[in-house]
Length: 386
Image 1 (tube, rainbow, N blue to C red):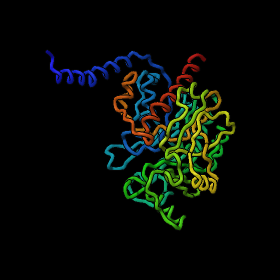
Image 2 (tube, rainbow, N blue to C red):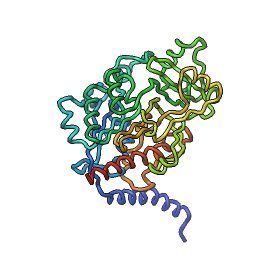
Image 3 (spheres, rainbow, N blue to C red):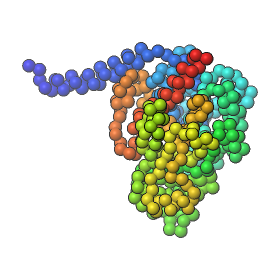
Image 4 (cartoon, helix red, strand yellow):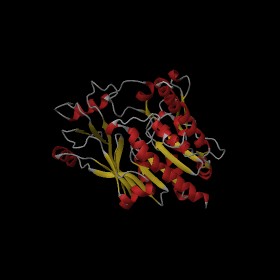
């Protein structure tokens, strides 16, 4: 007679070994889909590439590969900021888009993906304490050459994906306006961030410059202790919405029409606990999804005072999905890259924990992954038949 402890151990071994191995072997059988992608991230602060693992996870999970057949490497296959080993020496190199290379880059690459163009300040890179929100930048923002490359890709009708802060600081006003003109998307000057704890005494990673700026602008001083949303504009004006004090729902929602939900395979309503900006499309018919902030009367009064809307675009897709703007930092999600080499539910479930409305896991699994997969797959299918 088989003892129950032995059966339990056997079940555990099956879960730990057999299921992941089977998922990996099934993934290996997927056909490769060769597509050359220029991915840009100017805000990589560590050698781990945590800031864009989600993007590479989607590419690897779907077997989108280089023309050589190799998978994309999140540590090497991008343009932008590269921390160099040994990391404690704080040495780095920058891989830029240069004017003399624009034509060859636009010819070689099938698509471009601007994950993060904000960059790094001196304080962030060298680990200095700074209460100044406008501390001098080490590197960042869209450049004139970036704009010329984007324009060339748009002219060639190649896919361009861009994310949060694509139009914002530290990009110059001139480059921003020119980029807005070719994309027909316009930044309002406002960005926002959800925080699960506004009490800086209990949240060591909370930016202290926010407290200092707020206290300079308000006589009452910082008194927030719950979760909430902080808005900041290009003039450094701060607006704080605290859960229950101003908010009926603490986390912003991303809402999608039934038609778009079915087309892209995303939920009609999902929480998004991250960073976002307020931007508009010249043709609002190009909006795929919206951010919605649910406020009470006190919160609505505060938003109205600063002309901040409660509903604004989260995802904009134009020109037959050849230019896509995600107005949130959707790719800023740390996920073990090795799980991308597994097929089916195992890829998601191995480290999945339902963290509630403040968790990015649910958003990654149910919105980000199916949306990006649909956009790139449709584009790949289109250019494969051209």
